[in-house]
Length: 155
Ligand code: NI
Figure 1 (cartoon, helix red, strand yellow):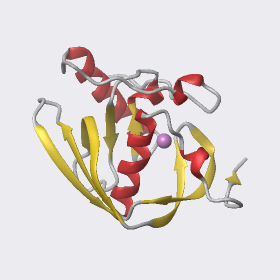
Figure 2 (spheres, protein in one colour):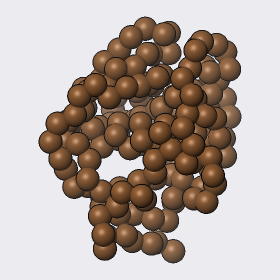
Figure 3 (cartoon, helix red, strand yellow):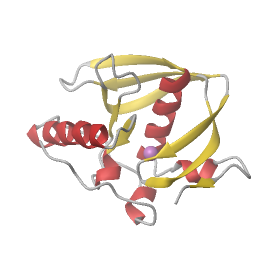
Figure 4 (tube, helix red, strand yellow):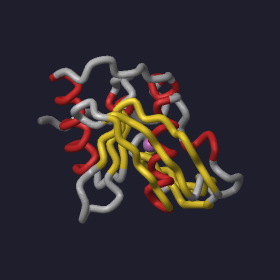
C-alpha cells in the first residue's frame, strides 16, 4: 500500500468525467487500498479516484470510524430525497470550506470489491458524502455549488 498524491485545486483532471471500471483487477484493488490509506492519512471522510489522478469510477467513504469503510465501484444514484444545507470541505481544496445543499437521503447502487452488486442507503452525513464523491466522478467539485457568501478560506 502507498499514500498517493492528492490532486489540488487548479488541476484540470478534477473537472474530467471518470470512466467505468470494466474489470476489478489487481491494479484496481491496489488503487482502492491506496485510496483508503490516503484518505485515512488525511482524516478524510471520502475520496474519489480522480483525486489521486485516476479517471476511474471508484469511491471510498468512511464517515463513521466505528464501522468499516465503504468501497463503491461504478456507483449510481438511484434515488434521492429531501435537502440539507451542510458545511463542506474537500481534500482537493484543503483550505476552503463552505455551505452547500445536498440531498438528505440517497440510495446508491454499486459493485463491491468482489464485483458483487450492492446498495447503500445514506442519510445525513453519509448522504452528503455519497453525493459529494459521486459528483467527483462527473468532474463536479463542491466549490462550484457553494451557497453564496458562505466561503471560508483558512490560511
Ligand atoms: Ni471532494
